[in-house]
Length: 337
Image: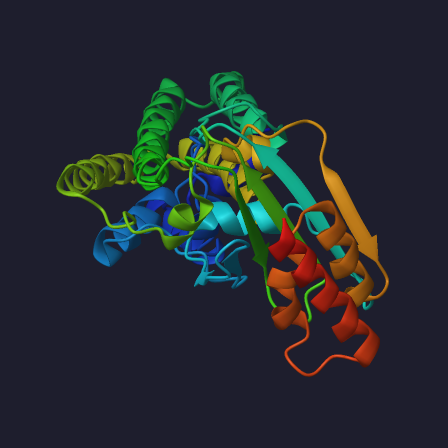
């Protein structure tokens, strides 16, 4: 232990901080696409600066997708991270053949869970507890109480930052209009994708198309002021960090490294319906076939109009005579109902 202290005692904390920020990638935008984690890490200030200057919530641009209303056939480009996660969380194992369609059923508006719900949600408070306990244990190896105080302050700022982002997401979800009659919506990444989801919303839920539009993604005046105040508080915390001794600085960085690892886990994990706040029925229908046309026909049997809505997406060209005859028969049956 003495050799470790001797190794770091001459290291300038400011240099350590600069090295830490240069080695850690900008992962917070992806990690906080679905807010909720208040784990302490030093990537928060940079993310808040980008959020404030952009004046917009993190866009879902990594995996473009389209939301299609089965009844009207209207297609809308998805701009919401919520819909992006909902689609990708139901993706099957990569395959070069076939199509999988997952049917989800809901009748309630989505909420904004800060913790819990899924593994990602429960992991945040667990990591925060480890950070608090770890900061206290560093006193046994020669660190001062400044480590524990700074970590606790950092956790408080991280939690407030997460709550601010959660409030922004709540604004996005609350802007969705309620569903007055049964509505069926398909979400797909387009031709060539191996997965799609079908969300059946009963009265009591909200329009998925409105969530996909993300019209309230811009930061309001209140949110902008809160983000600015948080940035000022983070600046004070970072300045305090530069006054720590070398041993204390390394201890704080060790705690922050755990937060960075958790942020990396968030960035690489797709949140499912529960983690996103959707209250879906436990029983869901999954349709899969090695041939895309067969999968679309099977989906049409499960829910009228689903296959017809996705048909021009996966088969923009002319169909075979037998396929054309089958779909014409389905159209005729739908009109007669």
